[in-house]
Length: 438
Image (cartoon, rainbow, N blue to C red; front, side, top):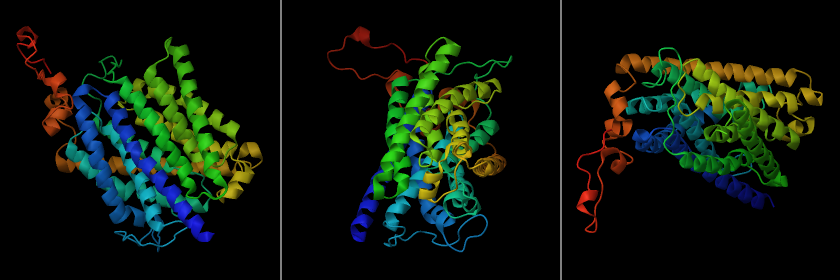
């Protein structure tokens, strides 16, 4: 029976890891659809590259810093350059657990790099991905998931509202502040110009892909099939996402007079982000409340950042950051004593007789982790800016688009350059006399 459970746990976690890795496809479509056409190819290429690079960094250093032995205050210190040992680990194959955790590291850096969108040099992505994967993500992951000091305090973050989403969002905030707004985003009077994404259908499909992948993200974090608890986690995840979408739709309808499509999509993602910490600790009805509040929060967070002239092109902070804070704090209110006991993490929240203790642990966790991620990411980018002579492309390159300036070709060559393929059946009058302007 133990061998059967070992195999089933390993299989389930491997399937979950595949779902999480497939979320990268969702991020490609989300970023490409939310940005302008002249940067679409760049977004797709850099996302694939940075996921590959972050995977190598995680193999060499990140896994050891999170889960290695001989730990100090910040990190573990063994198992560098993981060799694929076929040990059982905690009831499943260690290699499967490694791949699952690698996927989370890749998602975190993808969120962080959203703050670079449409204006950073490709070389900046390369260096930051490496340093983020060494100095930022694994430190926070060790504190919470690797047996570090926050784990000892009972910090509840089941699948990563803090570890993945808040960490990535705070790094994105540091990037967007240092890089400054995109050309033409804000007027002299402080008002903002709307840079509409070039394909809302891509963005909507991206959210669906991310939704499906999130079931691996959250339910897969059980890393076990015993008791089918992963089904309970999945249920909370689906309901929170749904509530977030509905709440964002209604709040945009009330405030803007229209049900804004990007807001609807962001609402669903915000609900997913928020429930990621609490999906294993709260009752089903509470997941609806958590997701609904997240949908409202993301709408106002995006408006607040824009009012402060912070140019967050793919809403990394308003979707992953602020809802990540709320989601982490929510267990301090809604965590039940029975679920906290069964998962072996923390205790009941305020509304279930646990007092303020768990809420304080949750607050301390988001405060320390958020500040650490922002400060270290800001320091990395500031140093890169000084050493590299700048991390932002030139004004001419930004106007031209990063597809052509960084990679030498457009993601949509026919649309952007005016080049069209003609057949023998095309009429001469159909051939344009000159290329379209860029």
